[in-house]
Image 1 (cartoon, rainbow, N blue to C red):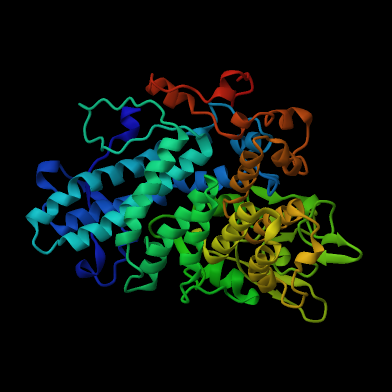
Image 2 (image 1 turned 30 degrees about the vertical axis):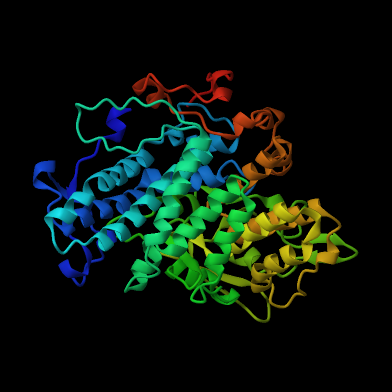
Length: 519
């Protein structure tokens, strides 16, 4: 594991004082330096902070953000050109040899952050322009990036090595055993509470405000962690902080594809990873969802979840001829039917625009030729996190307010429909399903669905509720049997990590299953 955590300190062109036409998040780090020659100026500290952000847009990170959050869920199925590793994941056939089990890229981000947090305070003594206030603001960004990386690891693997000191050279021995999920979550929560005190509310440019860590990004991540950890009061509190910001507004339904997912940096975005074709292409969305060069992508949307189909969250029957989402714009914006094959291809992130003929109601889809950003948090996600937390906190006593929160996103995408009424839902289970269904409609393909389903299973301490959803799009008793126990919901540690670090113990479920089908 030592080599996985090793970092070369880098110098980078940075921030507005260096070049007015250069976006510091888009510059590739270069020029290996030794520690004795580094950490002398504010620019040195900025360089390593830029490397922390830069690490988040590396292929091995963005692919896993998408794959860990979507591929095992009911949102996606294989397509004609699905990669074999992903095909196995879709069939719940996951072994320690699957490349997508590797966590090394996340620990590289973490090590960049650890390096900054250890050495940046020294710059205050060396550079009079680098004030403690500047340091604390930058530390807030880096603490949040590190916490985000650990939160992905915890949701994917549960117990993981928790490391807060940097690996600088080969003389260090970084064989580290796993820490419990509780230790990691408690630690990053405390880091984020510190970060919230010093993070900036906004930056001078829109690129920075949407592409760097702000107070709202800290609050959104804290809300997500609290929801995962079943701390509902705390989750609601953080959601309220985000929702109190009047600069955050939901985009009109007719502009969601264009403004939120094509152009990016919209009024509802809280934090998104920004890509540039000249520096780093977002191959995760391009290869898996499609683009103008290949509009089919590597995965597709399940036919039996399409509008009017048996298990669809769209045109969902509430009985007596009443439906949710009968004319939901998301059913047209987020995926489309290939008329020649009947396959439902993903359009979210892959598309530039959709235009609808007012006479025929048929849509024309135009695909993007450039790369897409990747949204980590946006306002609708936070609204629905609050709805979920409020329901779990209040149980049967506050359906009205829970459904009112759901209506904030539902009404945006169903402008001609009646507002959802709490009276249409008979009890806690019905409303819980509504919240989960609305999160599926709103956030599909954004790396959220599998984690939503795992939260459902964690609350029940059983995989049965999760399987009831995944069974709709995953065929075969053997595949469903691979999710029979709670430990099966997490990923195995990759075999190379196990070989490199003798202190690691394989996740329990994968010590008992065969690896004969390894790829």
